[in-house]
Amino acid sequence: MASTFFGMDIANSALSAAQVLMDVAGQNIANDATQGYSQQVAELAPTQPYAQPDMGGLYTPQLGTGVQVQEVQRVRAGYLDGLFRSTQSGESYYGTRSNYLTAIQSALDEPGSSGLSTAMNTFLSDFQTLSQDPQSTASRTVVQQDGEALAAQVQGIYKGLESVGQQAQSQASLDAQTVNTDLKQLGNLNQTIATAQALGQQPNDLLDERDNLLDSLSQLTNFSFTQNTTEVGSYDVTQVTVTMPAQGGGTVTLLDGGKYGSLSVQPTATSASSYASESAGLNLNAEEDTINGAAIDITSSDSLDSIAQKINDADAGVAATVVQNGSQYQLQLSSTTGQAIGGSGDDLFGTSAQGLGISLTSPQLAVSAQDADTGATSAVAPTGGSIGAAYAFVNQDLNPNYQGSLMSQLNGAVAALANAVNEQQEAGYYQDPTSGDWESGVPFFATSDGSSTITAANIALSSQVQGNTAYIAAAGTSGDVGDGSNATAIADIANESHGPLQQYSSFVSDMGSQVDLSQNLQGTAQSLLTQVTSQRSSTAGVSINDQMTNLMQAQTMYTAAAKVSEAMDSSLQSLISAIQP
Image (tube, rainbow, N blue to C red; front, side, top):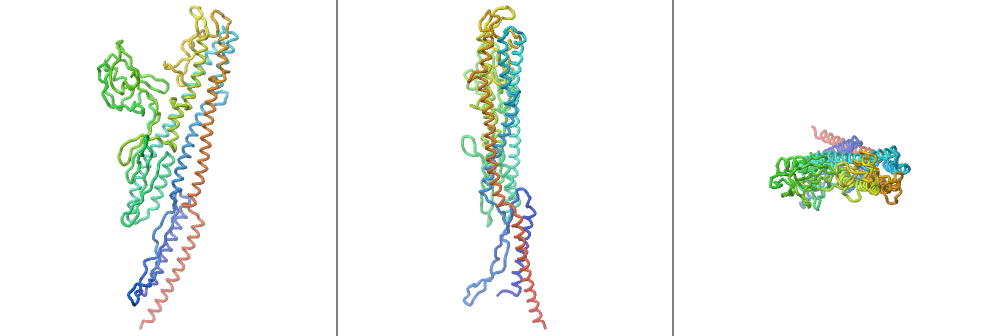
């Protein structure tokens, strides 16, 4: 049989539960504007019933003993969290890519009076003017100066593109640092949350903090997030695992419980003093190589300059120099004795037939991840978020060796113009300024670094044309002072249907298409992200109207429970008064 104070206990449990309901509603209202806060709900459940034995000894019927707050839960929808993060990763990728491409478009200044297409047309039209008076020193000087200005403008555009690429590399490095900071915090949170849940606590604020960090990570690259639940005693413990695809298959685990790995972004070597091992395609080994019998010790911390110095110090009859070829830095070896160079070692001799070069080229931005469980480091190819955008931009768009890339198109157009002018220049004739003899034309354009291939990075006037305008071959035949037919032929390059100007125009058009496409894809991703954010907010976000309703219900419950308590107290007072003598 229940005690005399049984009803008072029931009323007291209702008062306590109602108080918690009001506290939870107040907490939700207070955090209505808090970023990343998940609304909380108090789950009520009846307390353990009181069994009254009947005449047969069976414990029926059962009498309720009141109410209790079983737990205070967050309101979350896991599938919406996953959709939000994958969508945000895509939106961040296209937004970042759009910014980089727009910066390139600004550097080109096309269409515009100061763009390269205008400079190309001006330069070729100078030859048309020259053809009318082939011996005009003024006209020849204009051709020379505009040619030099054209080469300088091309190199300026290249440096502008290279600068945007360096900004992308720097930002990717900073983003990787953010990833590593977040991973460390997530590892600590996983441990703290697990400890609290194992004790039967509900660490809602910590769970929100963990989810916010996962949201932050999704902006940076294409991580996969998995939530695992295990039983510890009678309680469920949730842990989050973060993984990323590895190049060549498999995954790298960046977060597993309290263990966390790291992400590393290595930019392209920017000079001969950069570590040679920064080139992911080089795979520099720590080994002892030989040149003409002399030992050359290579370490992973050697730069091209230091390798060259070691070779020169070895006194092996070999001179080593580092030369720049466009955006590449190469170790070149030459014999000082006139004898062939012989030796062994993958690092010095590589796989080329000549075996004389180490080139820092592709990929230009290497990303690797350290596994949280094994500690092993694997190469990864990010495809989402801001890091993925920088990776694709640097390694593809700005990679001259990547087929169809923006840089390869620019190089192609520049080389086409230079080669067409050089070919026609060499088909004409000029009068030698020293001997007065008529000679076949010399190249108009050359390279600034001595390499054989003209690119946007190295285009320059040939030393002869730079030194004397007499080397401009305006004549189509030798001995005819008034012949300007070859100058006309050079000017006609501007009108070729598939000529260099058309190639450059196609490059500019493709550039604009890339910008438009990235902006459209960003807009689509942003629209989808807005929808998903709205859905997630409607589930996990705080509704003031709903919370006011909950608050009023809890208040009504509290008032009613107080009435029950008052009635029970009055009954007890009557009982006590009745039994007093």
